[in-house]
Image (tube, rainbow, N blue to C red; front, side, top):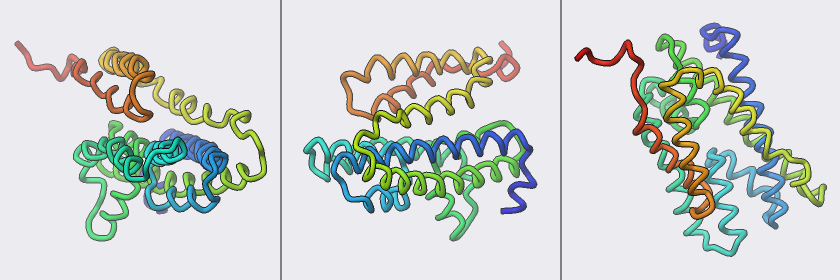
Length: 227
């Protein structure tokens, strides 16, 4: 772990810490809302450790709380996590081998892949992936545990507004990248698609459909083939 931090610059470490903090705060909201729906305290914590996929966990509990079958909830969670397949294919070199590979795949998430895809040397990408992945693997269950305890004590946890913290911090992290038009175009299109379909599709599906924005992505001018 010490070699990981030596490989990363201060700006990257700060960004990773902010992302992990956001995940932890979102975990508090997740744990509290799960308990408010009538589930036992231990359940969101166990799910946070074993599944380690916030969107799928929220979707699972939401479907079951609404009266859906657990099998349908699991199927919906697997559909939402289908995005992890291209994630893994996009950065196979960061996982390592043997038991490290198994652990590396377990801590694969939106945030760790985003840091691994940032420009830089392979060592920096690998260090950023592991630092963020392990940070999320610690902060998410801790946040869920704190939220579960909080949910058992506070009658109306939605009044705290904890669910707004995570998207706000992530938006702040990606704002610098949006200065590039080649990045801004697919982001805006994907966001528009997600907003448009949100009222008519299950939770989590808009995120997958937002990937259609990538169809409109164009490489930077320096990387385009000459005519």
